[in-house]
Image (cartoon, rainbow over all chains, first blue to last red; front, top):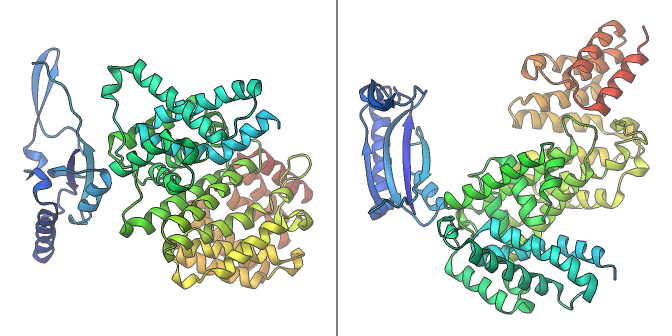
Length: 115
Length: 427
């Protein structure tokens, strides 16, 4: 199964952390990569939500707004897409990631597109 | 033999095992559950006419399997999009073999019910949903009964169960025993689920019954079953074999008082006024026996907390009369529990009661400071304060505290008790 791991943390979580703390977090990501290996299908760190652009259709027309979906105490800061046999495997991997994160684990589903 | 009595017995004893086999084979909780329920219904009709078969469990398994296959055929295309549970090849294989020769099934698959329990009591589900689903799947408690026991409407309970079943399949929770390094924490979740079911039965916050004995009894049955399955399936590794002991001891000791806790009119009888001759001495003996086997320093934090609660219940159980109660010892245990739960207001409240017994009402009243803010909607804080004020001879203050408690109380029997106490003050 494919799972998307959404990484969220308080907006100033990174900038307020000490250099040593930041280094530890980077090392956690390194261990995550070493452990999960080729089961990582993708993953990126994201620029801040203040750089997000949201598009919705209003009265049939696409409208752009400045900012993310919703204002929350935590922001989405990055993601991993992984391939795993089951949820327990994914939560086991997630335990390696920095403990300051909130992680939302979402299973991916198959949608049949018309030819 | 009476068919319906026999069917009920088989339901209680075999439901979880048969369901676990069907889940292993068909990888769908809804399909397995419906097929097995249908098979029991068919048995009720057929056995009445033809008599009870020599191997009733095998009959039910064969009938449920056929019904599941019929349903799959009828669903045809739609079924292809239904998410399936993750079941490893060996388990599927064993389930297939058990179906092929249902008379042979019992011993070989001793851990099937345990898999089912670990699946339903998975930490990815909310504890309330996990508790209901575990009782439904492992013990076969009906949706209607669950709704009644958890005080929700039946469609609400049905929707809760449906959502939980779907989440387990879509999120990819596997039908397997947890990895060894996670076993202890998963057993703790099982314990939480069983205890949640127990407390929902023991101290309902609202509604007419003081003790919904059945649910508490089912929770004990679940804990006993899990304990014996864990002991036989995991080679009795210390943490898993004993992880549920403090919980079972606590439940037995509390549950042993159920008959004495309610009077003939359904009114609440508090501990000091209970007829101790109506406590179940066999359950007390079993609870005390379990406690003697436990080495508290080896327990994890959750186990230690349950042990403290059980040790308190044991002190009450040992006292043959209220005046024989060792209140200083109970106050000491509550002080430890207070420290361990870092000032949980519910624990502080109970500690205040014990301290009042050990050192007088004024000492108890002191510990109530700040609890009204922590538990603003609870009738128990003003209820206890009223009781202690009355004992300290402060009738006017006691009366106003009783008024406050009566206004907040949602349980009919407890409210009647408070009103009676208020009336005793006079004035």
